Amino acid sequence: MEDDKHSTHNYDEEHSLLLELSEKDPLFDKKKKLLQVVGISPDECVCLKGSDTPATLNSVLDLLLQKARVIYFTEVDLYFAASDVIQSVKFQNPRNELEALQSIMFLIDNSILNSKHLRVDILQDLRNMTLEKINALGNTIKDDTKIVGNFRCERESRLVHWGEGEGVKTKLEIAYVEGAGRGAIAKENLKVGDIALVIPVTVIISEELVHKSDMFPVLEKIEGITSETMLLLWSMKEKHNHESKFKFYFDTLPEVFNTGLSFGVDALLELDGTLLLEEIVQAKEHLRTQYDELFPALYHARPDIFPPDLYTWENFLWACELWYSNSMKVMFPNGRFQTCLVPIAGFLNHSINPHIMQYGKVDSATNCLKFPLSRPCNAGEQCFLSYGKLSSSHLITFYGFSTQADNPYDVIPIDLDLPNIDDYENGNLMSDWTNHMVRGTWLSENHEIFHYGLPSPLLEHFRRAQGSAMQPKNLAIELEILSVLCSTFEDMMQGICDTDDDDSWDVKLASTFKKSQRRIFSSIVTSCKAGSKLYASLMFANASSRRRSSILANHVSEF
Ligand SMILES: C[S@@+](CC[C@H](N)C(=O)[O-])C[C@H]1O[C@@H](n2cnc3c(N)ncnc32)[C@H](O)[C@@H]1O
Image 1 (spheres, helix red, strand yellow):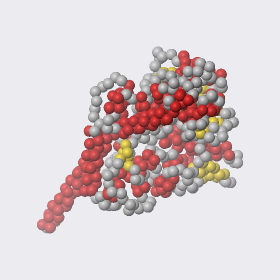
Image 2 (cartoon, protein in one colour; image 1 turned 135 degrees about the vertical axis):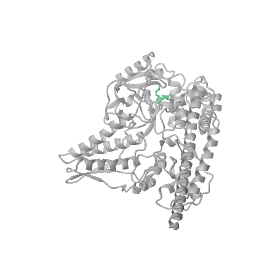
Image 3 (cartoon, rainbow, N blue to C red; image 1 turned 45 degrees about the vertical axis):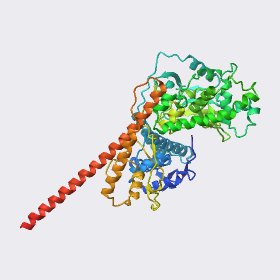
């Protein structure tokens, strides 16, 4: 979504740019502290002068980029960044970097637009440098989509054709792609800022449709019912309406969704010992309770509107999976957010390094939803959307897939059985964390001594619990911490056993998830062992050098 975090001011000889860290950000205090650690003031502008050299512009961009990275950090990013931040806020992951660069482009574009100066060359130069960085980053992201040629997309073409008649404009075509059903392929080379898809509001399935339907007078009387639930019930019936305006859309929907909510017993058994099992069971229980609150009461009261054969539990679950996996939050010109189904845009698959991130706000001038590119996508490549910064467990539960690439949001929460420590110093970056987590240590840049690729807030918590202050660090305590962590994660790894191959989609997905969890645990064990080895060699080197000194001292004393 576009945001209003940024503002520009123009002074006589200079352009002043302000990337603003919003005080409404729930992570404001932590982000402010992090910025202060690297010497960046949260509310300070950077100034550009006409006389700035490329080297000066580079430093300006670097400063803006560090700040933008922090502004777009999630709690997970912040937690793990604490280990790597020493003098500057470095690159964390492509997704955060793209968001940060995109926000800088937005700021510069606004500045150019609002500039009262005749000469905006310097802003243009800065824009070009930012664009170069985005393009370079885009080139490092590999999306190897394989298009499955022998599937015809007749229903999909009919939907696109209908949509175009309603005002849809698209630079994407729909094809079957390996491992993800349908996907959207760029028909031409798309640059940053190009609009891949334009969807008029009239094509969007939103609350308004329920309000016009015969079920609304019944539903509105149900205490506490949400507009999402109303829409879900509406879509269960509309799917079978041959006269529906959205018939072409419903025709393209799959008969089954295959999300975690449809996992069978074998797949659930496979997940034994993982948090994903809990997530799926809880989500499903919640939906079952919701269904039981509505049915059979509704079809007993109004069988004409809610026919029992349509409103079964199985059909309800299908609709839940449809809405979880295909809906988007859309902000309408009146400022209200609504959960909607967006035909055609619903063919866009998700990536952790997406091409399209800033969407979801209806443009009030055109009354359309636009999908602009945040990084280039060449003709023939699959164009990916961001469904959000989601973990694999969330993606499996509600979307039925897990990402292939390393997902920085795949974290495992850690319940520490350690006493609460309240003697933390203010201003210490590690001190703000009470909830701890781990993720694959291959994602960390810092495997040095005292870091080991592990999150610093977690290590610091252990040190405090052992009575070891930040500085100087006690080697014996470090070894003890590494040994505790190592055995804890070895146990956790053993709790997730390997299984035989199974052909069913759900057991396969469950076992892929387990493998990814084991990989995370195994990386932590390896890092702990590497850390311990490092100490052993250091202690050996120290001992040898002490021995050498004492031999030398003996020799000297002989003279
Ligand atoms: C909004 S739909 C996208 C279109 C979908 N592929 C289809 O054929 O209808 C979301 C669903 O697409 C699939 N999907 C999206 N991104 C994916 C990815 N990166 N890998 C595998 N499947 C994906 C999942 O089944 C998900 O529930």
